[in-house]
Amino acid sequence: MAVDAIGVVSSSTSATPQNVGISQTQFLQLLLTQLQYQDPLKPVDNTEFVAQLAQFSALQISQETSDGINTSLTIQAGQQAIALMGKKVTVKSASTGSSGASATGTVTAVTFTSTGDALLSVTTTGSSSPLTNIKLSDVTELSQ
Image (cartoon, rainbow, N blue to C red; front, side, top):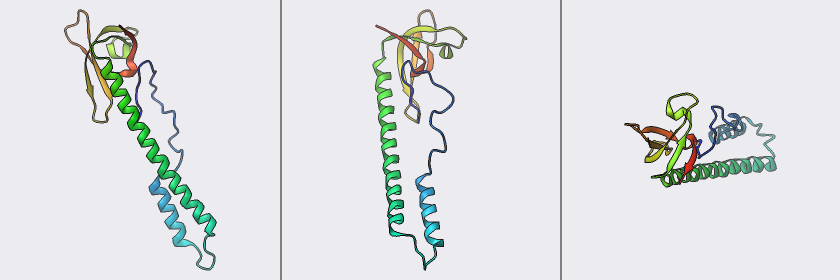
């Protein structure tokens, strides 16, 4: 899950390649297939087998670490959004609906999506309805 932060320019392309490695399920399938089709007279060398098990263990630990970091980043982004309540912010044009423009207003509400992403509502001066569903990455300036 990608987490937005204040002042970060979000891009449509992911920085992490999609084919970095294999999943835990794919690794297990590969290991079981290897064991199923190995020659009983020439079994896999014990050191190779232990190395494969170590790779599996490292993959599992890496996945758990990644999940933990993603959870921490989501919580941190939520805390950052809540801290903006009542603050004056400037948001970039993608949120304002007009190209090349920005809007300044006060953060009046924070909502969270089902995935935990924080979205702001900003009430601008002279506007009858607030700007809604503003990502943290759309905030370009914070005024006291």
